Every structure is written in C-alpha cells, then in structure tokens.
Amino acid sequence: MSPTRAGIATAVIVLCAVAAPRPSLALDLESALLKVTAANPTLAAGVARAEAAKRRVGPAGAWESPTLELGVVNVPTSGGLDSDPMTMEMLRLSQRVPAFGANRLAREAARAEASGEAAAAEVSLLEIWGMTWETYGDAYVAGELARLAEAHDTEMAHMILAARARYESGNGRLEDILRAQAEQANTLSDAASFRAEEAQGHARLDALRGIEPGPVTEWLAPPPAVVIPATPDAWLAALGPAHPRLRAQRAQVDRYRLEARAARRAIWPDLELSGTYGRREPLLGRFSQPDMFSASVAWTLPIFAISRQRAEAAGLDAMARASDAERTAAELDLRARVLAAHAAAVAAQRAVALLADTVVTTQRRASDASWISYRAGTTDLWRVFESTHALYADEIALLRARQDLSRAEAQLLSLTGRGDLLGISLAPPAERSGR
Image (cartoon, rainbow, N blue to C red):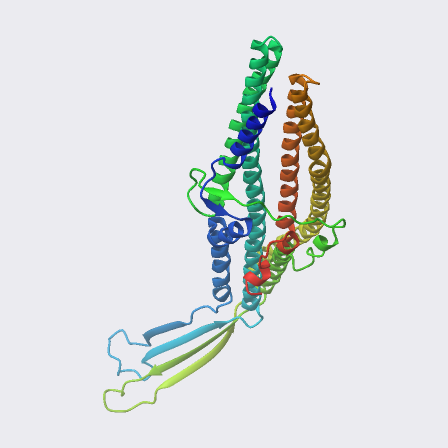
C-alpha cells in the first residue's frame, strides 16, 4: 500500500469513528439519578406504603366508642308512664377505659411499624440508585463498544481492499484477504451484539425513570471518573445504626416486642364507666316526682382470654428474637458486601489503569509501527492484521473493565447511599424523609 493510500484509509477510519451518528439528546448520570428519584414507580409505591402505615398509628391506640342507651324501665303491663313511681324514661351512657395501657402499647407498635415502612422505602431508594448506576454504566459501555466495533469494521474493510490489491498484483496472499474478511464478519457480529446491549440498557434506564421504554434517543455522557480509596473505611462508616436497612430491622424488633406487651396487657381487666339518668312523669298526672340518676364502675374479667393472650405474646416474643437475629445478620451481611464491592472496585480500577495507560497505549503504538513497516515494505499485511486485532481485543477489555468498575461502584452506592464518594451529589435518605 502506498503512503498516500494508507493515509487516506487512516483518515477515513478516524472520520467514521468521530462522525458516527449519535442521538441528539444528552443525559448524564446525575440527571438520571435525580429523575429516577422523582419518578420511579417502585419508589412511589414505597412512599405510599410508608404514608399508609403512618396513618394507621392514630387509630391503633384509639379508645372504643362510647355506648348510648335509650329506653324505659319499670313500665306496668297495663301501660302508662305515670301509674307507678318507679317507671322512668332512661338514658344511659357507658365507656370502656383501657386503664392499664394496652391501647398505648398498640399505638407504639403501630408507630414502630410506620418507622419500619419508612426505612424500607429508604432501602428501596438505595437499591434503585444502585440499579440506575449499573444500568447507566452498562448502556454507556455498550454504546462505546458498538462504536469501537463499527470503527474496526471500517478498518477491516480498508484492509480487505489493500489485501486484494496486493493479491491481484501478485505480491500478496489469498489468506490475507480471507482472514480480513473473517475478522470483518466477526466485527459485524460484535457490533450487532453491542447495539443490542445498548438498547437493553436504555430500555431498563427508561423503565427506572418511569417512562415508557422506546428506541435509543439519548446520548449518555461518560460516568464521573473518581478514585476509589485503597481502604473501605469511608464506606463502612455509613453502616451505623442509622442505616435504613438496620433501622427497618430494629423497628420490626420493637414492633413485635410492643405487640407482645400489648397482648399480655390485654389479660388485665379494663375499666368500664357508666351513668344513667331517669326521668319520671308526674304520678297519676298530679304528683310531681324527682328525676333519678345512677353511676357505676365495672371491671372486665378476661378469664377465658388468658391462655390465648399468653400464647400470642409468646409467639410475638419469638418473632422479636428472630427479627433481632436477622438484624445482626443484616449488619454482618452489609459489611461483608461492602468489603467485597470495595475489593472488586479497587481491582477493576487497577485493571482500567493498566489497560488504559500501558496495554492499549502499547498496542496502539505497535499497530502504528506495523503500518509504518508495511508501508516501508519491511513486513507483510499479516503482521498489520495481528496488531490491529490485538489492539481491538485490548480496547474491548478496557471497556469491559470500566463496566466492572461501574458495577462495583453501583454496588457500593446501593449498600451505603454515599454518592458523594463517587462524585455525585445525592441527598441522603434520612434528609429526604425529613428525619
């Protein structure tokens, strides 16, 4: 290949890579996270459940409704309300009073349930943030892979032309043409697969933002480049008692314990107050009579509920112990997953640095050198093909390493909510819920 021809081919390759069509709309990761926070239907469902639990707190501790009774007493069978001095028109009002705090405990249990639902909504928020980060990274990397494959396809097309020209002039080999054609076919297959990955990522990103998935209409800006610290201390610091997953487990423990206390308290008698007012007609229509009233205090005797309430309380105590054990397990699991995600992020970050700064750079220089040698006539086209193929494979490995890094960062965000450590400003869940 002449220097002029090689220069033209190189220029065309660069032009195709730079001028490849992209969607007109741009989206960055921070904007995607904010849109997901505002419009994700799963998050909306969690907020609604938390609101419903909050509304149940008041009714849980309400007293029973009073009883109003109207009637007549001591009416002779002969009829008439003025023939007997004991005949009265009666009004009676009674109210049961939970004297030993069963209702208060029920209200506190409902309040603990509401606190748990609010914490569960925050856990969902963290999980959705992590899913969004991972989905965005997958879609971005898939788009970059597709553009890389399309640029490599253009380079293979020019290599086929060069191999055919040399073969027809009697200076080349048929296998150079065939291998370049096979490489081009594999590249086209790669491009189709990468475009499919990109479409899948955009569809998931649309669904997370609460919009109907459709064709790829947005260009994704590169995710923020941050340096993952060598130690996970900053991430582990977010796993304190205020972590929403641990708060949800703690609230569940409190709820079961309070319900167990309320069940035991139901064994104690409740107080019932009642008052009656009796109005009397004038006796025989001539002799006035004073009205009468009465008042009483009664105690319920839950004799037949003792065994049932004790069994219910014992079951709730067991559930509280189970939930407490689950809280401990959740705390250990969170620490283990943060350590694992941090280790994966550090390893991926190291791989990205080595591939970007050493491997790909060296392979690109080797590819340029092979083209120069080919133009000078000191090597054959097969060496150029090998260098070009190796560069393409290493560039794919670099993008996949960046995808692994993005996924590890997404896991850290999902576990801790510390977007500030990843270069994204996100309000902590506790602030969003007004705590």
